[in-house]
Amino acid sequence: MVKRGLYGQTVTVYHPVAVKKRVDRFVLHDVFCQLGSREVPDAAGAKHGAAMLLVVPERTRGAASAGGGEAAAGAKVDAADQAAGAAAEASGDLREMRYGVDYKLAAGDRVLLGEGADVTWDEWGRFVPAEVDGLGVITYVLPLYLRGGLHHVEAGAWWSAGGAGAGRLAR
Image (cartoon, rainbow, N blue to C red; front, side):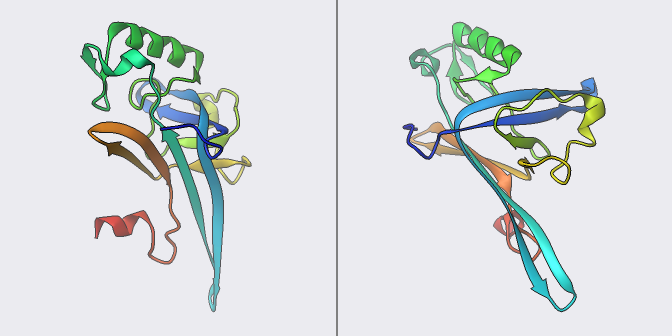
């Protein structure tokens, strides 16, 4: 995906690993992220809902598509790229972003606008949008492909108080 003005934001993705009682932190640069909310008044009061869209373009070095092993997202990755991915994951600072190799996204992950601090497992329960400005919770992850290769990943939360949103995709 070509970088344009739309993909100029930095976000921090927090991915809980319950088995190890830790929270992995991934800083993603040059992405698009929009957080919002919606309120619909009715006779019984107002219905509230959250909306969030995160678009992460797939970015690799030139050799990433011509190597040996298989990445989690189906892209071929050589040993040098795997080592680079491990180093990027260890530092938490990702300029080269390959879904399933350099970063993870899953329902329940939290996304913070900007570069955020580490969060411990003990802090995870209190790290919620009601308590932290600029924080959203992912409810769906959708990898999108173009010409047989991963093009970008969309993740977000859809307004659902009125029955619209990600749930309607399955119907």
